[in-house]
Structures are given as structure tokens and as C-alpha cells.
Image (cartoon, rainbow, N blue to C red):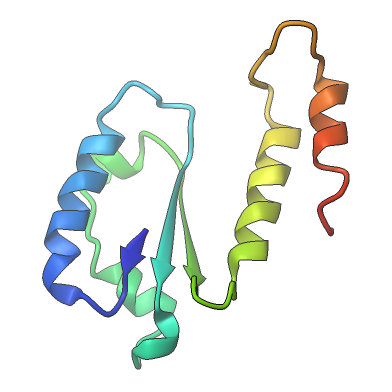
Length: 113
């Protein structure tokens, strides 16, 4: 989660993101939550452009950006729906002993579509 209002920490956030991208979880997408968009006068796109990630790291895995307002939940529903859809369409479903993909489908059935 990145605080859109705290530009002084953008470099630190970018460094942590680049370190995360070099880890071995190359099939796992990265979700960046850009928080506090309601408190600044910039778009999600302009905040994301501040996070210049080296091309070789961007190509390693999918990076998804979502604008949210954590204090009132704005945008969080879109994040949860994206995660749900990503899990349901993924060929890689975490296995739990005694569970199946149907169990995963059932666990998300209560989320709004």
C-alpha cells in the first residue's frame, strides 16, 4: 500500500517494490494499492507514473494498480473482486489437504459480482 499523499516516501516504496519483484514468486501478480487519493489532486495514473520500475522487472510479473480510500473503503471492493477473479481463473490454486477447486469457488460465492 502506497500513501499517495506522502511523496517523500515514494522512493522508499519503489525500492521495496523492486526488491519484491526480484523474489522468486514470478507467477504471482503484484497489487499496488494507492491510498488517500481523495486527499490529493492527482489521478491514479499520475501517482503510478511516479513509480518508475525498471523494464526488466516489469516484464517478470503482472503489476496491477488500484486507487483506494482505506478510511471509507472506496475502491476496496474492486480489489477483492480482482483477487477473486484472479484466483478463480488461475491454473495455480493453493492446495489445502482435503480441499478442491470447488471449495475455492464456494468460498468466494458470497462476494458481489
